[in-house]
Length: 471
Ligand code: NAD
Image 1: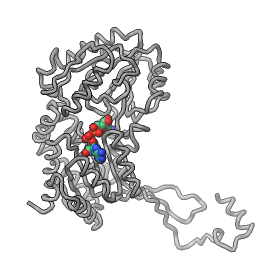
Image 2 (image 1 turned 180 degrees about the horizontal axis):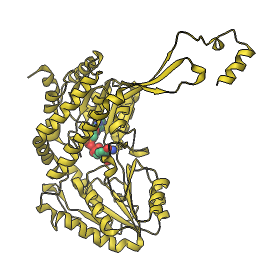
Image 3 (image 1 turned 120 degrees about the vertical axis):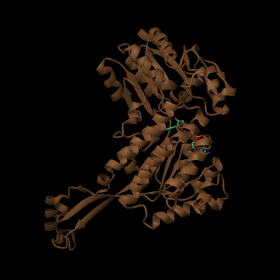
Image 4 (image 1 turned 90 degrees about the vertical axis):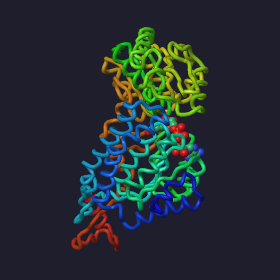
């Protein structure tokens, strides 16, 4: 075993271990190792190789942590990751080329370019709900942009974080990529170090802690947070299609998805048929007792199990589910009706398999309801009437929006993924990852002839008159 491996595999080392780890990857960056196209491509290809060779172990770890069904784990945490890395590889050489911009007459003779330079050492802190891909995805962007990286997987997904700590040093350049495992103490210690970018995914309370720590070193930060993402169902919606799509999006990964529809606002004219079709859709997907099948995930731990059960008890009448079994970390897919907007389930992000369904009288009322709350990470509008969809697109604010489906905007590599307001700041995926982890440096190169005498003293009115014409 290499000394590097010893450092990265230690779960919670003494303070010096974390400082030494950061110093090691900074030294790798300072030696200029990460800057070349060849190094970046080698790391991205190694990530692809890791996915291919280690898929069974990745799926196994995700099953142990979250009871993730094989298909959900394979598609969201392996295939989607691979698609993203292939997209980075395909475009990387082009993105690395300096980008020429127009030089105004006043600045002639000269040329102007934007040059993307790596920021330096990035810290990536990830949560437990997609514990493999939420480390992997930003890591791909940080490596593509030519950074050294320290990743801190979530301690609440121990099997996955142990696997990450084992695999990364084997596949990636250990001089420039390190894994630090641990919880609050280790993350606090990491945050005391100086980084050149911090990329945090998780809840907003810790997001504020990260932002405060970053302020000490004036480190730029990306915060990928959560919140209550609403779905609106119009009276013009196709209810068969809508309920099927919402059922999938809500109960995928047992509701533990940052962009899962948190609650549904349904036009009163279709409220009753919507509820009964939604129950049918859920049962068609996961069976009458999802606990018996292999397609339905589990809650990450007893603490979150108790939290979600408390939200179910906080208000509303279950038309489906409502029951849980903490020993199996199971909570049945739950649909609540007659939910009061003041209940806890309508105040806190649910992050579990519970969908409160509230009736609304109009599009205006739904938009006003959404706009009276924090800006969500995602928003979904289901309607056949195109102008209704347009209104949600134009009159609400959210990190992203999918119309007539849910969650899918984040699978498009050409779209930025990120929040706004309370749901986060900054974005990534595809070129947006490259931008997030790069500094876009302004470069202006002047010719040695064509001295701009007009700019220099001694000043006089004649020079100023010429300058006025040039600007
Ligand atoms: P979590 O408990 O795993 O915490 C996230 C990370 O923060 C972990 O690595 C953890 O070690 C660290 N952490 C926890 N407490 C800390 C502290 N006091 N100081 C420093 N670091 C600390 O995950 P979570 O926060 O429960 O994740 C769920 C939340 O994340 C939800 O709100 C969800 O919407 C959001 N989320 C957002 C996205 C996105 O892409 N926007 C994706 C997934 C989850």
